[in-house]
Length: 166
Length: 406
Image (cartoon, rainbow over all chains, first blue to last red; front, top):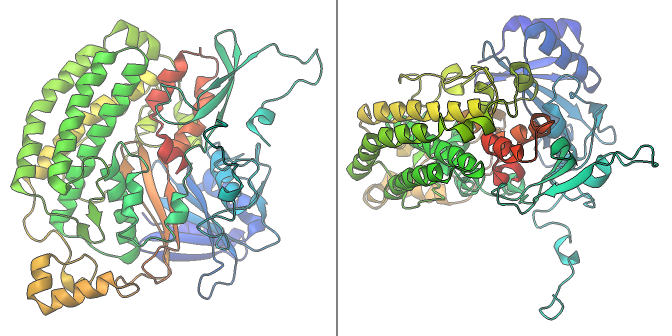
């Protein structure tokens, strides 16, 4: 269900540089990285978007006509009215840090850890920002577009144990 | 930082807490798959739990950027592998939302039937495994017998029992045959009796009730704050069901109820799942008896679903369409846009965030995995309970490690 227009109008009044678009009945707003936490807080407290559905990220490195490197995506929903909104933030190297949404939603904890793990985006104020799916000694961020599908030598570094040694 | 360092280490003897650290998993019969929880125990009480996941991480989202929209359905089978049909439906639901394809009414009904059968089989296994872990073995055997019958239906439908890969962009692999319809009717006739027996085995079973009631309580506010969805949220009194809230497929035409409980404990989650099976069976019966006739795939002129062999060999449009679809970069018309589309999978909201870049391969294929989000709430649920309650809570959340780690 698309977002009510008064939500978008209020956001555009309160924050500068908020652009809204709609595709297949889904409303997306792009906000500035500095405003992210305030926008999420306002959506949660003033417009009852109480459910954080998902946090994800897209790396636009090989995307045609893309001007920004990363697009961080927050999907919110209202559990009473089933209204949804997508909040996006564009990020460029080297400022890959945004404010964590964990103070607003407990569910953001692991979702942000996964984004950090896969894309290397840091979240300020996150209670426990560690890698979640990959081993701690892993150095790369594999869902970035400059990371190859085959991996970068990780498999070759495993020591081979022969039958006699084992 | 490692898991060991995430748990606070004592600096000197005064700070020493004399708690016992126990590794639960990665290989433990009650985790059913591979996950690890580092527990701090005070006697038998769990003081804190630190989950360590990633043992089954296989880069599904990265693979999604290299397989085309039809090929990737085989990978979705392997996410929540106890109900692969729901994942297939969820994936192509998102793909069709991205491309703006309206599937045929018959296809909508067939997908509804298989999603609901998948929900029944998922709930049978999750409640069965939960019963098994807290000591009710018979329940599991009864449940698994019915699950085998659902496998038989899927085998007759698409040839595969376990990894179905049944849906395609704009349609399904094979149309439903009268044999499949008959098998579903037989199942729908026999299943209520088994369900009744299952309820009689556990609902008032004293051991089961005492091990699950009041254990792992998730309040309504916490369920929303922790992004829970599906039966876990509904057992905590969040009446959110995407089948009602944003009706997709044929759910708007069919009559069913959203099953909710208020207690939010393990028993409530078990109870909601049992109640949902009844509603799913009603949905299956209604959809099967009202199955529209007509084509199952979208027309060949739209160039999305592969035409059948008769069309390929006997019509020029079929030949052209088949040829273009199997050539790279000649098939689908994909907008350079991003879309999020979710379905109500047995475990919760299973959505895909897709970014299209004009080619027939997704630029980004993010899966919103319900197991991942529910497992994040696990340390909160288990705090203060005993070691033996872990299996009850894990079972009631239905954590599937393949979906957890992807």
